[in-house]
Length: 226
Image (cartoon, rainbow, N blue to C red; front, side):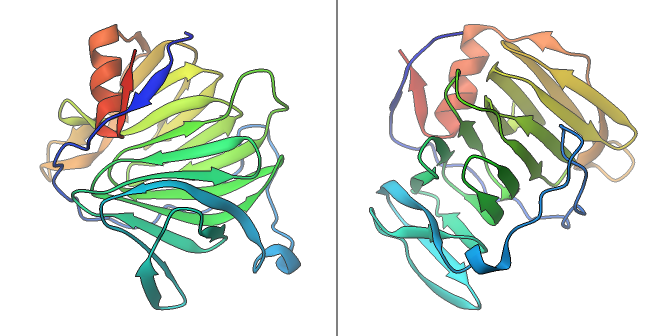
């Protein structure tokens, strides 16, 4: 899929409560990422675009995130209900965050990968095709996603947690199920009917997503397909 995207105003999305962090896991490529402690205080990227209220927290200190500000490991980036953030990690990787979204940059090293945590909301991970692949784990409220250099959406869509891959390959693991999702495909993670929670269910079969649903998902992360 080669659709281009442009930014648009954020919809007003309701904030969800984070249900608990998922433990560190083996990455999709079979290796475990270890951050060099010396790099933890160094800038790993920058805020390319900020709209509305977006805050950054680290070591119990919170401040407004402004365009051009450096991004560090262990930064918790929080977009408000009118917020949007486009973050650069390294030279080639972007994270796009919609309204009411929180992302923890747990540990990231350019051209190698690392660990991110989507605490709430919707995001798009974007790394162009043709570049060297990186190993990355995205922790979420439902489970984890193993990434090998790709572009994908992750967040609530049509009443369930959903993952859509534009290009590349991800491994989605929730409960006892695991699905490999390729280009143009998506999966839904059903809620837990016993607790009436949005999370806790198993992964659907892999399906091709239509243009309408793709646009809807991207729009919730602040993007619109042309």
